[in-house]
Length: 336
Ligand code: KG4
Ligand code: ZN
Image 1: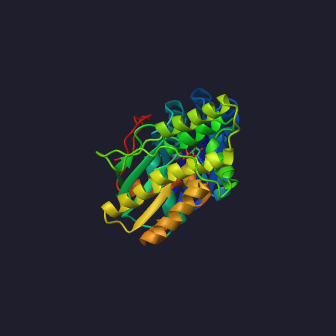
Image 2 (image 1 turned 90 degrees about the vertical axis):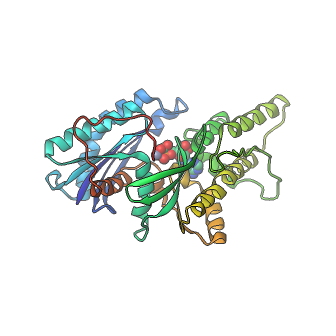
Image 3 (image 1 turned 120 degrees about the horizontal axis):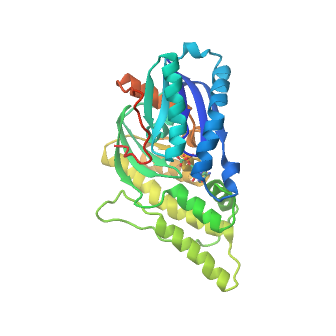
């Protein structure tokens, strides 16, 4: 089955051709990062317009790279939620028209089911059940994945996502957007012998798998202001390493706990922040200690892409999910 997949939930216009769920024939991603960097974050209206401008050309390119004609396509899969509403609508409207024009099914895909499915592309042996930490710019979710078409939220961030905390702290340090990658590099330069700075790691007694990053973000930004007011220079690599330690302490034990709570033997990580080198190393170490099989997708499958939407769309279609032309997009949509 050949699926044309479209992803426009945020600031990447992405189109892919995926065969039988896991074979990526082409995957093109046009990042708008440079356009938004001058504003220090994504400007939704600009994102929508850029998607509209880029989507048709990228689709032609994706088909050409895959070496197929559009008449060979069996379905169109598209991200319908969650995300920036205008951005989602740009991709959805195009996907509807394309599917209607070709007379083939339209498959609606939840963005986070896509992030989870990135692991199916990377690891042919991976099959549900397993647990997955989805950690991106917009969400931090500990999910159980009992089957290809289902996911259950076991815990999540009550406020900012981990990626959002990285990006906002990076912005206050004057680092370019998106700041997660820059902070990752900065932390690598920290003196391994320097004692870490102490930042909060909140816990919720009523929901041990929930996390919160807003207090951490404020603590780091307040620390920076205080040091500046005192005329002290801040050891930025050390600050970044300490920030990473706090985020890792909040994510890694909970992800393992989530998997153990459901008796799962495998744990996957997904989303843009899954590209973080320190988080990956911490997961590798802890998973080995705990005897948990760990799945960390390659970097090209961590950030937003359409290949993962094609894969999730394939499994959704297998389970009878199709949309008609009344399909709408949703800015907020629970995963469970
Ligand atoms: O999954 P994604 O591409 O888009 C969303 O669905 O949000 O994730 C983007 C997020 C941004 O916050 C970005 O700073 C973060 O992923 N990110 C990283 C790294 N690479 C991207 N965060 C930490 N370390 C990285 N190496
Ligand atoms: Zn994403």
